Length: 113
Length: 114
Image 1 (spheres, rainbow over the protein chains, first blue to last red):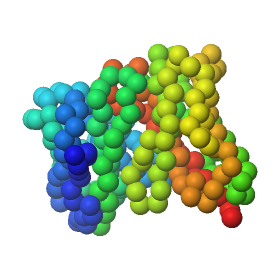
Image 2 (image 1 turned 60 degrees about the vertical axis):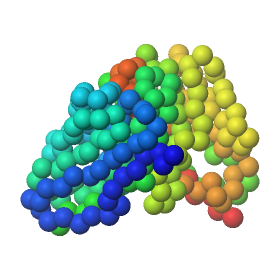
Image 3 (image 1 turned 120 degrees about the vertical axis):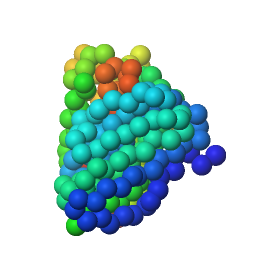
Image 4 (image 1 turned 180 degrees about the horizontal axis):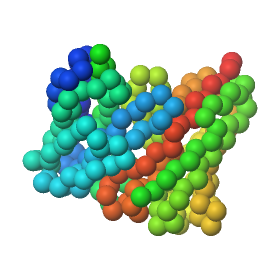
């Protein structure tokens, strides 16, 4: 049981490039979320999904796209990378509804030059 | 959606002293309040949580208290040890928990001096 797996662990991009951050979970969790973590800003919600085929925007969605074609996978796409998107990205999953803790992946450290 | 405020942003204590971190939230429908610990370069990990039907919960040296009337909750760490040094985050459910995600405070960097 691997939990939440994120790839890659590190990535350097040039401004304007696109890429996809991968996230997979093997706990059969319905709910998945993407957060970004910047110094002094805590964890901010980018996008989330309450089940396959359903996604919605969080606090800071601009510049990112998501899709949820299966229960297991929830990729995050940067359409045209900007230096402001330099951050650590965490994917999380939960069983769903209220009163459920989030299970986090190890994160992807992304630098945009 | 929910809004969570966390104080202080940094906290330095001597080993063996107690540490208290406080959070306020805005949505009266929120009913689940977890605390996460994040060591440098690692993922956030749940250390304790409390649900709205109780006022206090303890787990060894860690405790969380909840005041639903005032909409605030606190993390208490007693007999602090150097390995308690980390960043701590409080959180509350977004939209009452219906969306399966959390809104986090900005974090408190705790330093325990030996």
